[in-house]
Image (cartoon, rainbow, N blue to C red; front, side):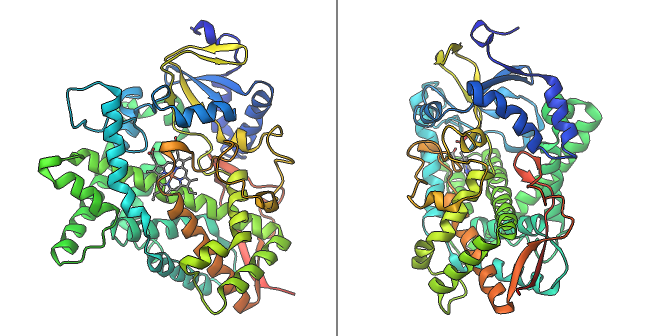
Length: 479
Ligand code: HEM
């Protein structure tokens, strides 16, 4: 039954959702185009997900409110909204999916302000780990990846898988002081356990029909989750060993352990520590792997832009292989390419659900309090009302530094107080890979091209969310 306020808003039917599952074979991008016509007309559609009305909106003014007014639009907690789902068991209540209901210090309170303070406290726990990042650890993993490219010289390389392995290793080393060695051994027990849970969670059948409530499927999936939890225990054990040996690096895991083990002022319980490790794994590597894959696809398609990027990197870096902290800032054109890629293919195409605590007037509708709102970033980034030729790859549009999210039309990392904690982490990671590849290409006089007969030759094919179908690239000698 539709609440009155939602009556006139276009509904995405279950049929469209089934279409989503089917189009997984042919490109999820088709679904975005299907949504687009409604967004361009009204800026809003609604659908029913797991028994709840969800309104997807594409409007910079709502985006601004959503990001700045946390008291009116708190993030929904997965555990409360989808109780007992596998997703809730996997990431539970954590920094990214909650509005402060992390084990409140003042446990009895339901006062929003106090809950918010707990969240701010938790962001404060994590923040120092992202202030000064160890560039050499990013570089080590990137060099290891180049070694792999050397061995597969001239053959097509599936870049998405390689980028996933690279970003997992970087996250492990930089944030947890742990070596997943996914580049060295893509089938290691850790990587397999992680990938299996990831696959189960993102399975469209789970998202649409909650098949993880079917006992036999649930049991199998819980077993996979238990394996992954053992992996998290292993990561924590390794960290304790390193700390006992006096090898502190003040990384993210150390800050989270302090928040967990200080019994006089415990901010994180053991379960919350595990859930936060899981959410950092989720947020911290797949997103950047998608960004790097789509950017390499774009560079392989737009050779003139590839050439211009190479020229800038060689000019700014001089004899350096890896950019210094200062050089990161000088790579203007590379930064424009990175931002334009994140506009065209935002790895997080929608924001985490928020719940309306007051009625919201939007155009001719009143969206009633209690409705869940999902901001469709992809729609904002592709709106012809907000961008000239939105479907074109034009890095130059960022010449005027339109990346500050000030007008809420570029929101790849969200904004406001809940802005992505790892945005700097990811930008550094992307710049290091691109610089190293430019240097490597130059040395070998290579250029990067799409493999012949690629399924992406007429445009990038998206699989699920913003993750593209595998992309095969070849590195061949320039004429
Ligand atoms: C290209 C890469 C990335 C993109 C596009 C991205 C995007 C986003 C977006 C859009 C949000 C806001 C979600 C919302 O408000 O609903 C977010 C939040 C978050 N991201 Fe990222 N992210 C990226 C990389 C990373 C990395 C590398 C890390 C950690 C190492 C990370 C950790 C987080 C965390 C913890 C939050 C939650 C912050 C909060 O709610 O207070 N992200 N990210």
